[in-house]
Image 1 (cartoon, helix red, strand yellow):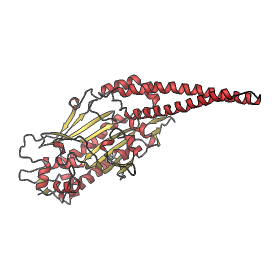
Image 2 (image 1 turned 90 degrees about the vertical axis):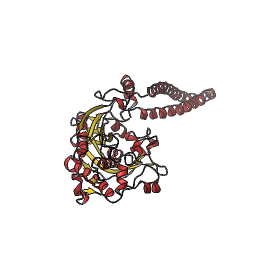
Image 3 (image 1 turned 135 degrees about the vertical axis):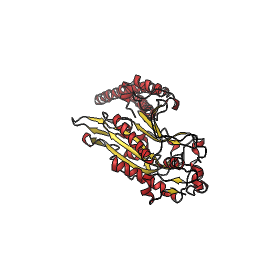
Image 4 (image 1 turned 180 degrees about the vertical axis):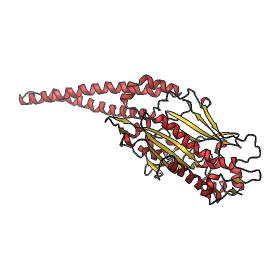
Length: 423
């Protein structure tokens, strides 16, 4: 969330940023309209308060002199009533201004390609060789049910649509994927593992940019005003909310596994089948806190960390950089990693890695002290490392054999008690 001072001083830059994002500029129009009213009201209130102070002194002098002060008291009553009314109006305007500040998205980095939608995203690289034209590959939900490791009928009986129940080797593979990813990020990539709560307070969800914009997609426990996490990004970004760190302690790398809960309002189509788009799913998340000077270099490393998960699993994928119009609300720059799904005949997102620059740090009030004693906001980065259910879906399709079995990727076998094939 930008300060009022920042918005005033970067007016042209913010208008240009909204246009690049194909985001309505009326949010800024409204801000400056209210800001002008706020300035005028503040000036008027200062004038009236000065008047009251002067008249209060005059009243004292006239009282001591035995003069009639009834007309002055009557005028003072009218002025005080006006002050009260203006203060109420000012409070309302300031509340509206603060709400608008939360609606202004991040400024895109200069390296982000201009574009209105996902059609304008740019492919950066590919890894692996997708097997195209395999008409005999069953969708992952079909092969999973045939093998007895996925049960969507009973999950629907328990919780409704868009949930999944895993059995036997399916449950084992889910745990194996989580442990494999955490071990890789902790032991090789240098992240510190966090095991966080799965419910967060409103101010923490607001700090990441999920609130107020995406409240309808989140599960809310109204009695306690707590939200089920849609991603571990919320808790990892919120770890240092309100804190001032030291430059010598940066960068900080955190990783966490959590179940994630999303309403996915409005989602439709083939992706709602199986494990791709559910209301509850597992994910391993990565978050970095860095200095502004190193954050975009750290973004490239973050993407590489997520890529290595897929490389070790032997899953073909591609990396794309999102256009200004397709980028998330909080992001300054985003790379998506898309895994190959044979039954779909296309790539499907499995990880999204973003640098939010100081956008989330401003909302969470996370600063650091430089070695010269000056203070600045940290830069925050986040990325999926990766979505566990989507990784399983990709394995069930890419490792499927003609006789209806699924080969277990070699890197997972130690986590699955040596199991080599699911049959």
